[in-house]
Image 1 (cartoon, rainbow, N blue to C red):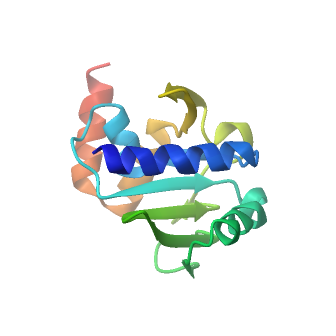
Image 2: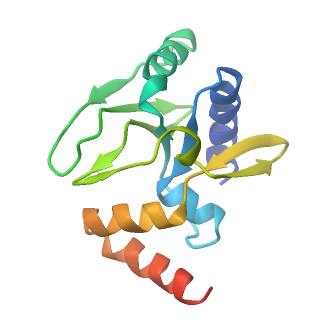
Image 3: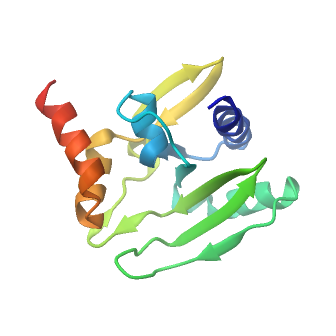
Length: 151
């Protein structure tokens, strides 16, 4: 688990240094809330206004990446996929699932948490519950519904 956390922290520092508006989402977000034990990748939701800065960051770090846009139920402006230090990473720029446009600006990641001294921005779990419902990811929906029921 340390390797994936190290990669997340390195990227968080790089994003913060460039004043990119971002938030952790997906399974990594659930893991940070102790809702899942293991994750296979890291999903960073990126404000679409910072798209150019993110691409410049990847170029500066010499990280090869591939991109996808608007596919199936996803209206995401751009999905940037890459492997960094053997960890799969997704930058979801302007994340959209069906009719749900992920919040942007200060609402994208309303919670910050310090992890090993690094300011890590967390997306709202309720936003991810709705996104997972639209993606029909019933395993994640069940986990989050149980979490909110017990709060």
